[in-house]
Length: 264
Image (cartoon, rainbow, N blue to C red; front, side, top):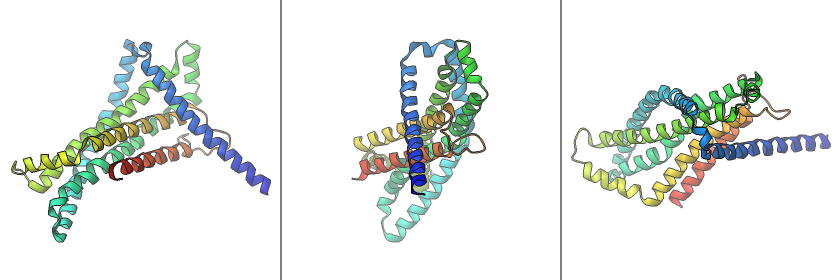
């Protein structure tokens, strides 16, 4: 019984190490393809533009509306709570710190993962199982350049686009929620915005958004490109739950590191 437990532990450690190695290897391959001029031919640009369009446009209006509604609700809750405690001067700054710096980028990354990159990774797994990727190789084409690279770039683009646009919408909604349809508070608002977005916090915010986009773009594709290790569980769509767990773990780790960079 003890030997069986050690064997299961060893196999689990092997699957864990193999899963992370595949993600790192895929990131290196994508970087090489990005730096290769042959990845930007006319047909490759057409595929990339089409993938970006199909991955970003359908989810953009819905998430923007969700971000606007979330911004109004959180702004109202924070302002009313601050009024009751006599902390009105800190209410708007708290809204921007919590909403724009923390919630919106993480929510955008999760939204893109659930609506775009995880289904795209599952579709890539079905193409692999059906032999389509092998057929590309047999015809002399590189399936990584044809199928993988557009999906990764489109997922990263969708995450950055949703985060950037939703942060702008959240800033506008926060202003309207506090000052209303007037320009009387514009100077105070811009001054407070400058106090929040210092160079160090802006750098951390930018890096966090980019790392979120890379995580949601790479990890599901790594799970779809490679067959699961022996003994790994599979979902109904062919995706390994371990791959999804890695994605959420990486997002939480990036968020924790950003909090440390901002407030410690």
